[in-house]
Image (cartoon, rainbow, N blue to C red; front, side, top):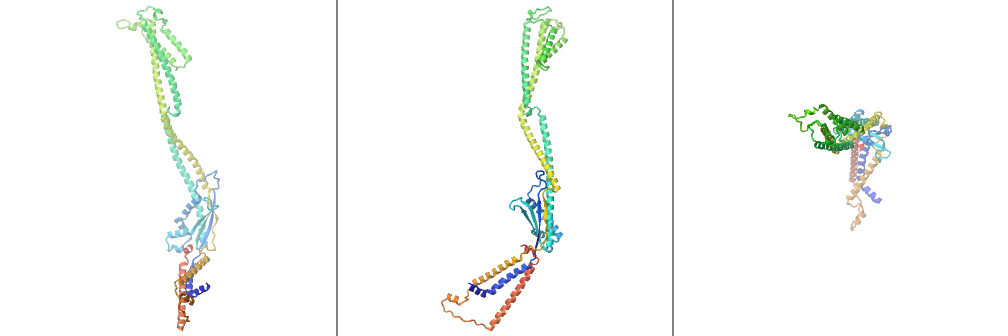
Length: 523
C-alpha cells in the first residue's frame, strides 16, 4: 500500500503540490490580512421592586423579556443609532460607500443582547442581561457598549413611568365616564320611583294592607247602608199606616202606632246623647259618629229654617198632600229625611272607598311590570356602581404605582459590570482558520490526485502490463537526449515562475479583498 502511494506521489506530485499550495496560500493571505474585531460586554442587573407588592402593586405587569424587546426596538431605532454613529464616528469608511440605512443595519448586526437568568429554560427568570458590541477600535467599542447600556437603563425608567402615568390617566377618564353614567342612572331610578309612587314592589304589602282596610270599611259602609235602608223602610211603613190628621188636636200614642210622643227638640237632645255615647267608643272618623253628627246638623238646620206648619198648604188654602199639623207625623218624616241624608253620606263614602280600592288594585296589577322595569334599571345601576367602585380602587392603586415609579422605587436596571476595552480580539480565530484551511487544501489535493489516477488509463509498470495481456513484454530502457534534458529544465523553470507569479497575484488579491473587510470577519 505504501509502495502504491509512493508511486502515485512520484507520478502526481507536480499536480498535488500546486493544488495544495494555491488554495492554502489564498486562505493564509486572507486570514493574515483580515482586520481584528474587538468586543466589549456590559452586564446590566435587574433590580426588583423595592416596595413590597403587598403594599403597592405595580401597574407595569408586562414580562421583563417582553419589555426588553420593546426597549430594544426603541434603542435600535434608526434615529437613536444614527446619533451614536455620529457621536463616536463609527464606520467612517463605510459611510462614504453605503447608504445610511445600510450603516444602521450594520450596527444592529454588531449589537447583541443576551438574557441571563437562574433558569434559562423558564420564562420570567431573567435576573440580568448582557449588551455586547463589536468594532475595530477597542476603546471606542467599550464606550459604545457603555452608552447602549445606559440607554437601556434610562429607557426602562422612562417606559415604566410613562406606562404608570398612562394607566392612571386612563383610569381617571374611565372613572369620570362611569360617574356620569352612575349619576344619570341614579336620576332615572329616582324619577321612576317618584313617577310610580305607591306601585313599587317594596310598597306592595302596604298597598295590600290598604286594600284590606278599605275593603273592611266598604263592608261596614254597606252594612250601615243596609241598616239605614231597613230603618227608612220601617219609617215609611209607619207613615203609610198613620192616618193624616188635618187639625191640631192631640193624638194618643195608640193612634200613632205606639210611637211615644216626642218633640223635635227631644229628638235633637236624644241624638246628641247618642253622639256622646258613640264618641266614647269610637273616634270622630267612625262612620256612625259621622252619620249621627250629620243628622244632628241637618235637624238643627231644619228646625231653624222650617216655616210654620200652617204655611205648608196649597194655593187654595188646603194642606198639601203631606202637609199635616200632627207633630208626631212631622217627626216621623224628619227621621226619614235624616235617614236619607245618612244614606247619601254613606253612598258618597262608598263611592270614595270603591275608587280607592280600584286605584289600589290597579297599582297592585301594575306592580309586576313596574318591578321588571325597576329590576332592569336597578341592574344597570348596580353594575355601574360596582364598576365605579372597582375603578376608584384601581385608580388609587395606579396613583400609588405612579408615585412609586416617579420615586424610582419600582423595578430598575443597574449596570453591574461596565464594558472595558478588550486587549484580545474577539475575531478572527486565525489558528482555527489556518487549520481548517490546511485540511481543506490537503483534501482538495488528494481529490485532484485521485481524480487524475481514475482518468489515467496508461500502464505504469511491467507487471501491470503483463497481467493485462498474454503477449510477451520486452522492457527497453528510456533514452534521454540532451535536448530532452534542456526541455525539461525549461518547463520546470517556466512552471516555477508561473506558479510564483500566481501565488504573488493571489496574495495581492487577498490583500485587497481582506484588508479592512470586517464583514468578512463577521461571517
